[in-house]
Length: 201
Image 1 (tube, helix red, strand yellow):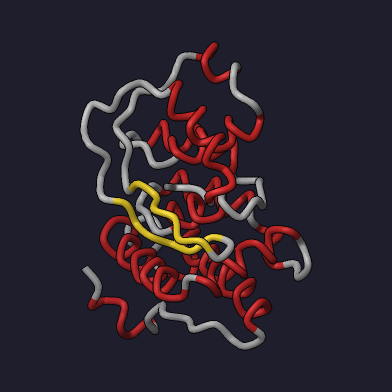
Image 2 (cartoon, rainbow, N blue to C red):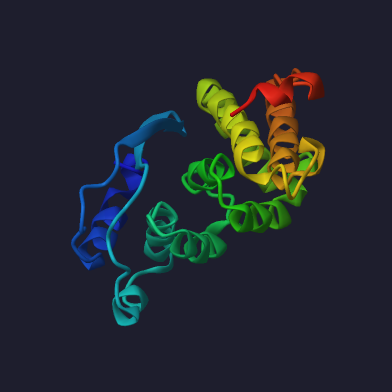
């Protein structure tokens, strides 16, 4: 249920090579992808499949596997699989990347920021795909914006004294730009002004 219905066969092939989960997946979050509601796990606890099982999958199936393991409970595993998909503009990949924008691992934010800089260029595949996803999921993106600010305030003030220099803020600016162009109007910026940031955390 984490992907649009037309990918069900590929998703089943991926599930067949994944080791059994050590724990139940954390409750999923719901977003809309190409007009369909999908349910993406908050966290997965499956070990990674062996290399030969992965190579037996098609390229599309490997893409879905990397999407799922970007939700893994281990941040190193999440980053490793993110790096395989972050350059994709396929609409079902987008929510997996945006979810990581709203999380707390700085190294992952930097990977995303480095890869998604072309979002500033109207008409590119990424600009269109990410802009459409945000337009289709405004409440979800509003929550993502708030989480980015909160995690910066809780964990990264020592490294980035100003929110303006934080990689998560750069990503939010890029995503809002894409959404603004897609929507035809300025997308709301929910980052607090400097005088109110101290109220976070």
